[in-house]
Image (cartoon, rainbow, N blue to C red; front, top):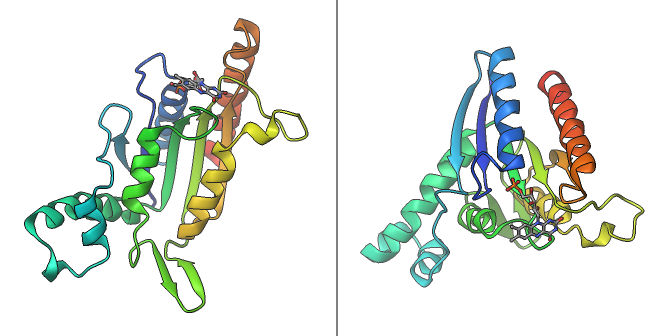
Length: 206
Ligand SMILES: Cc1cc2nc3c(=O)[nH]c(=O)nc-3n(C[C@H](O)[C@H](O)[C@H](O)COP(=O)(O)O)c2cc1C
C-alpha cells in the first residue's frame, strides 16, 4: 500500500492540460490500486507563502529560540514538509512557465527544501534525506524541446526538477510531457493523446 501526494500547480481550471492529465492518472491509479491513499494539494489555486525573513531566521535556529512571528512562518513549512515526507510517491502536475517551473511550484519547493528535514549538510557537503520515493512529473509545455533539437537547451523545467528533487534524495523520476500544446490543433491533440497513453502505461508500470 502506497501513499501518494498529488500536486497541481496550474492556476487554470478545466482548461489546464497538466491538471486534466494528472486527474485522469490519479483516478485510474485509484481504480487499479484501491488500497493506496492520496493527499491532494492545489498550489495553482491555493499557493503557499513565499519565504520571508522570519522564515529564514526560524529555519536556521532551534524552535525554543523562535519569536511568535518566526514560529508561525516555519509552522507552515513544517506542515508542508510533514505532508511531503508522509508520501511514498509524488504526482507533480506542472505547467512550463518561461522555460521552467511556475512560481507557485517554486514557492512550494522553497518551503520544503529544509536543512535537517529534507537535506543535511556536513563537512562532506550536502546530502539528501528523502529516500525510497518515486516522482511522476506531468509537464504541460506550449513548445517542444526534444533532445537533439536546437530548442532542447531552453527546457529548464526538466533539469531543474532533476536537480532539486535529486538534491533531497529523490532520483526515481519519470517525466511525461504534453508538449507542443501551442503548435496548432493537430499537434496539440496528438501531444495530449501521447501523454494520455504514457500515463495509462504508467498506471501499471510506475
Ligand atoms: C505565463 C506563461 C508562461 C509560459 N511560458 C512558456 C514557456 O516558456 N515555454 C513553453 O513551452 N510554454 C510556455 N507557456 C505555455 C504553457 O506551458 C502551456 O499553456 C501549458 O499548457 C500550461 O499548463 P496548463 O495547461 O496545465 O495550465 C506559458 C504559459 C504561460 C501562461
